[in-house]
Amino acid sequence: MADETIAEVLEKRGFTRRAFLQLCATVTAALALSPADAAEMTRRLQSAPRPTVIYLSYQECTGCLESLTRSFSPGLASLIFNDISLAFNDTLQAAAGEAAESAKDTAMKKAWGKYLLIVDGSVPLPQNGAYCTVAGRSAISDLKHAAGGAAAVVAVGTCAAFGGLPYASPNPTGAVPVSDIVRDRPVINVSGCPPIAEVITGVIMYYTTFGLPALDRLRRPTNFYGNSIHDRCYRRPFYDRGLFAKTFDDEGARQGWCLFELGCKGPVTHNACPTMKWNGGTSFPIESGHPCLGCSEPGFWDKGGFYRPLSVPTGHWSRAGVIGGAAAAGAVTGLAVAAVARSRQDRAQKNRQSGTDKKNPKP
Amino acid sequence: MNGASLLDFARGPGFEVAVAMLAFGVVWRLVGILALRRPVDHSEPRTGWGWVGGLRLVFSRSWPRREFRERVLHWDIISYLFHIGYAVAILGYVPHILVIRNLTGLRWPGLPGGVIAFFAGISAAALLALLGHRMSSPVLRRLSNFDDYFSWLAVFAPLVTGLMAYYNMGDSYQLVLGLHVLFGDLLLAWLPFGKIMHVILFAFSRATTGTVYGRRGAAL
Ligand code: SF4
Ligand code: SF4
Image (cartoon, rainbow over all chains, first blue to last red; front, side, top):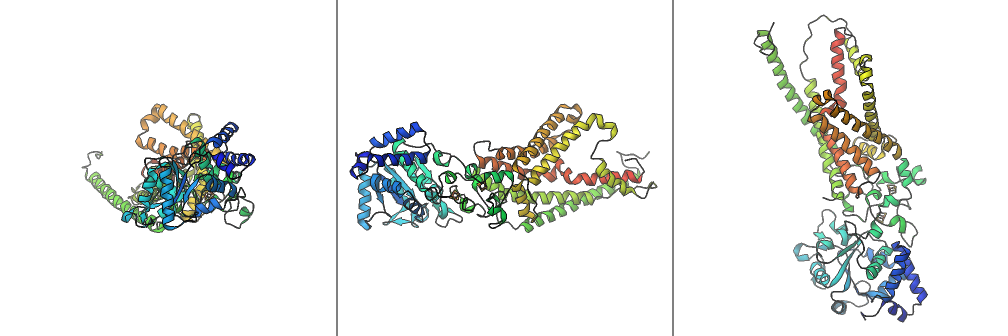
């Protein structure tokens, strides 16, 4: 089965060549490939061997998989997962219990060293990983084993990519991102809470045809994460003109002004929301009037509050206490310094009167 | 440390320490100076209105006297460009206003980003010119010490990094923004301890001088 090409698989399932080309067009458009690269992708997809994809879930909420399967282009997602490549996913498959585990083992053994491992969810480390176990095995040992046979690992969602919600302060389970554990295989981070469905499928298709995509310093594919939300935001002209909505229902909000003052993290968030949008290109959060939470960036839960403007200080210090304490300490220091200076002034005065001041002798 | 954690630090603990140092330093220096013993002037006052002289000097020293105008007026104008540009950038830019609102509850309308960038650009150019002048004029050079150059840097660094962040220069926006906020912290923390303290002390020193001379009947 591993030797079949993608085109053969699709043909067997009754897809016409026209449908295949349509699939290619969707993917290449999502990837914003040049026409030459798009043609190359189509050519390679035809002859590429059907990839094996193993999908494992740890500390996660299944939102990423929901995003994927409920996207408005289920055609694409289901094509990839049902018809092209998915060998194992414990949430989607019908099998359960030991049958499921043995299906996973068989799939992994068959494609050992070659499969693409998708992971969603973070991995807890303390107590030998006891906070997350699957079939009696800790997530950490399961992941280490699975990664051992993977050609590459795709960390889907912010939990897998950067720790996400489980990692948020105080991180009770000692969760870490996948890249903290998998160090000897390429890791691609497809962050987002959840990531856009077309981004997940696009990355998988790209990997299948061209191999590893170009990554940014957080290992996210630059195809999708190269721009900040702010760079591509249609409300940007209002930001530049200094026009900001101050509450969710003021005149500015109605006029579609910039959401910076309402806490928008768009300026420091890299994702494809403004261009690819959600729900099959319907809209994205800022377009619906809500500031960007920064969900595709590390530590986005702990940035001081979703509705606090980006520029304001984070932290929960007692402002009056800190400033008042510092001012009081300043006053005490000032008085002490002045007392010393005064006594020096007095001494100098006395010396001058008694004529013993050598520096300023009395005439 | 990457850009994100730098920004978190600069907006969080870094800012907190900076504001505490600002409060400590400003109060220390003001109390320290105001609690000094004033020398008693035994001479007969020429006028009972010495303090008027003090008040006048606070403003009249803001412009060069006629005798010096030809020599220094252009530098005064450049210095004004720097000060005004800097004030507009700090007080007119909405993200800055939000910081002030967050600390004090005060707020006022902001200016468009382009206007801010224009004033900030003028301010930066003026600062560079002033540094060049300081380093090339033999007199000023001898009068300058570490404080002058460090204070210049503490003022200049947030300005350029702010402009860089605005124009999205440098390959990581978060890093540039983090540096901008960090240099802002440095400026706040350093303000009371160096010559930048003149933003507060200028009025006190001018008023003191003006009052003393006013009492003696000197022309101000
Ligand atoms: S709404 Fe957010 S992303 Fe859009 S311009 Fe304003 S700050 Fe930038
Ligand atoms: S707009 Fe921001 S918070 Fe919302 S999905 Fe996109 S990156 Fe995440």
